[in-house]
Image (cartoon, rainbow, N blue to C red; front, side, top):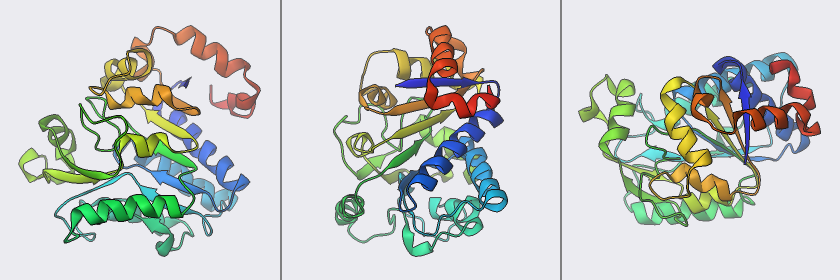
Length: 265
């Protein structure tokens, strides 16, 4: 795992977008794993800008989102399908048929989870998985105590997650769906590359636990320590409780892989 510390949340989002763009240019048929949430909005804004100003081509890639709420249709204002359409898909040249999210309205949710998992495998596996982190350390909707080898499945959402997502539902946690379909921790770890974006002081404590603490199902993001190629891009506020901060800065400044990104430092 590598930690990349940048001055502010905008530059952190730019870094993530530029990494995605570089991967997509190297492989036009890249399979992208996508995440939602307020932190990710800035990264998608940057990707749309790269598409418009530099002609970044999405026409041959395919995408699989981490999760979707159970019980709300795709056209619901708060569905993740709607989020992705508005934030990214409708603003770049990706065919809608190439974009995939779990169907939270499926009659047989267990079968839908198996179908979604099989679809990822049939596409060749996820080449680059984008991730955020929840206030309790979850990735996707893999809440605390999720099995670290779990696959796509239904999950009940914790009160902390309902509270965190309430602003998208009028500010009332009671309006947030209680269950969701999510890729499992094991599904995420199967990706060829993982890229997590974390910003803001409110995430500093849980980021430190995920990156430098023990690997534990209580903080599912800590499982990323097992990933063979994982970068965590953070701003100064989110990095404020990391113990290895000087080493992370040294690596970013000296690894040849990051030379083209030094203008963001």
